[in-house]
Image 1 (cartoon, helix red, strand yellow):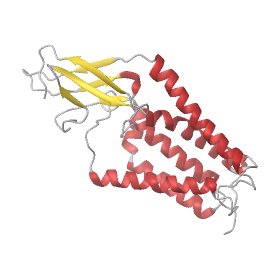
Image 2 (spheres, helix red, strand yellow; image 1 turned 135 degrees about the horizontal axis):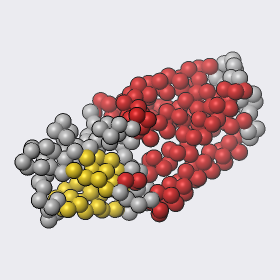
Image 3 (cartoon, one colour; image 1 turned 90 degrees about the vertical axis):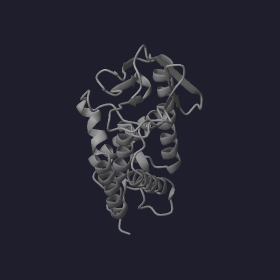
Image 4 (cartoon, helix red, strand yellow; image 1 turned 45 degrees about the horizontal axis):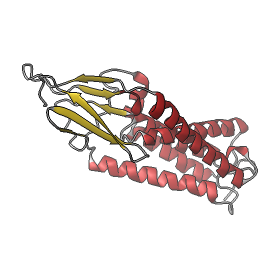
Length: 240
């Protein structure tokens, strides 16, 4: 396989994009929301950065293909992240279509295998090497792995310190009004990544909440496996 190394500015851009994706992916996964646009953006950054850095034309084309396909699959949620429209920036946590979920899982799995192979396959110099250097322009594959591990660790500790320890939970809620027939419009649990938007088109999110003594109990778990419960009083409202 012929090696056609990308230009230096492409390598630098790919390194920065990959670093951003790896660093911020941990915090996004820790929020434990399947359809979080941040997760989609981070995976997109990892795939795109890997594609830009690859020294193999074949690998580069496949990684760019994964990036484009992944972007098209999640274009709506990625755009929501930047548009900031209050009517669309809440993520419905209802079960997604099985085909979309299967395609997403397969895409992440296949793309992740490509990234893994590009990092550890030191026998073939055309995998993920930049002018005879490994990821991030480092001469040693060992240091490349160390850098990636450091980015993962930094992302995890940043999430733990800034979000789980210091960020307050802000709650905005609009419940079901029996007189008007409107359903639950939004439940926003602030800075910990739980965003819920329910309307007549959204099925009940039975695995996220249940009624207990006229209270809405929401449970979610981070990577620490410790459950966190929020109780929201209905005060005369009814559930949809």
